[in-house]
Length: 393
Ligand SMILES: Cc1ncc(COP(=O)(O)O)c(C=O)c1O
Image 1 (cartoon, protein in one colour):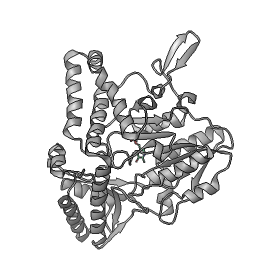
Image 2 (cartoon, rainbow, N blue to C red; image 1 turned 45 degrees about the vertical axis):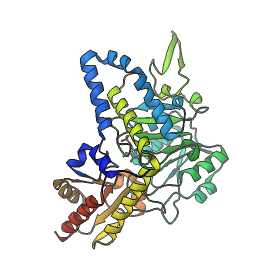
Image 3 (cartoon, rainbow, N blue to C red; image 1 turned 90 degrees about the horizontal axis):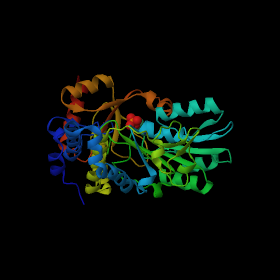
Image 4 (cartoon, rainbow, N blue to C red; image 1 turned 90 degrees about the vertical axis):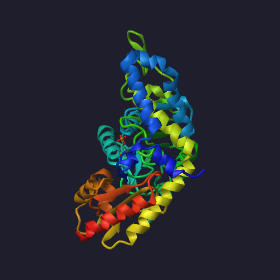
């Protein structure tokens, strides 16, 4: 299937208002996602919040099935949380570490994850080590293989970083982790929704993702996958009486499924929005989405290469829909604002969100234009023209 761009835009009200290249921040929601949330909020207003959840119980439960279909797991391996960070944290902080254990991560690792490694290292004496990148930018599977010994307890990488189009070789890394029996945590926050992701193919034991980015779901929602077999062994870092049944005054029993990582109270409108977003993405097909996103990003990268005074900041053999660059002599925050004044949305990625990579490459804050399948070639031309005007001052 190819993407019917006119249909996609007709179903995306925001496209009439803005030229949206901040899809790696939060993509524009399509009508079914908006409707799923509004309908539920209206139902809550009419009959009561608990009563609305009870009435819609089957649809709410169906969100786990949608996530399972999206990433190729079983619904029992899925927890829905308020964002990708909480999802990632709930699994990471459940992993046992001792002094001398090694945590291996990527040079492009996301700041939220890295500070958590540092905190766990401070608490336990575990060591955080960075897998060198290949000259082309991606985490090197060969370098990883060379680092493995019996003290490596976790391989934890970001699939697509926040600061560029790089796609890490997640499946190759998964094969190495599996061969050595090492737990593998994949931060798929920036990749889920823009390319097919299958947890078996990736070989990951744990995966985290968010709703609002390439999935086009609502803000304030994310999810966690933990492989059956591992999940039963993990004690969540915090629990409530829904994650664990209080069975005796001095005893609780954790749930057997991944919902042991959740707490009871939830935003059901957001969950239904996430479910609608996943079903919508699956209806287009992730391979078709990836093809369109990659083609548009290639068009944008070519257009940027033709503009004087633009430095591309993307690295990687395989690149996705996130395009980063700087404009010589133009402050990126001012550029973002100037574009925003023309209803063109981009974002700025700060060095502190990917500190190791930014330091290694001496990166300043970079402008991030992230395309989605509903963007058009005309919109890309419009962005390139606006950038050329900015450069001319
Ligand atoms: C690579 C990566 N991981 C994790 C996150 C955190 O996602 P959330 O804001 O949903 O917690 C982000 C957000 O930008 C990200 O870029």
